[in-house]
Length: 167
Image 1 (cartoon, rainbow, N blue to C red):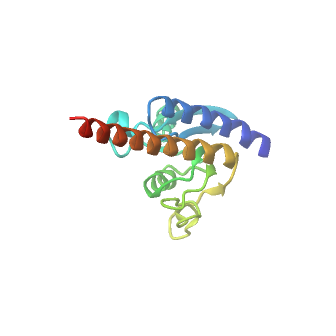
Image 2 (cartoon, helix red, strand yellow):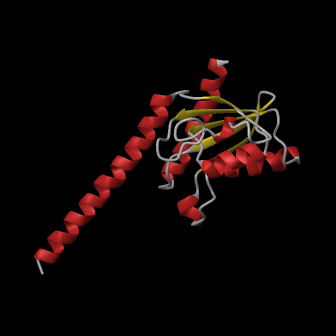
């Protein structure tokens, strides 16, 4: 199963790269049913200016449209970053069987890091969770993205201070 997990996580990473090219946080998701990719998406929150356009939500919407059902009971979700509370809720509600993620999210991860909504027996559905698949690749992509943003902001601030001092 690990080789399949890595294969599909690589597809999620390709989606994350699409997000990065749009200056979005590089998170990608892929949903697989019976060995076939039925949905793929990446973050579009900045593009849409809509808080709920996370990769997982968009992929779940696409998958539901493809199978013409809100139930994704036999589907696996591959995502480059551990799902947040909102996405974990959508995963539970859509009955996704298995969630495989790359990088853990200590600030918002709800698949075992900050909390574990996906395995909470108080809900009527739990998802199997596999963590750390291609973790280094996923983590590095996110770290580099935020490092680039910090450097850009620092450079812009420095340019702003230089132009003020020359006036």
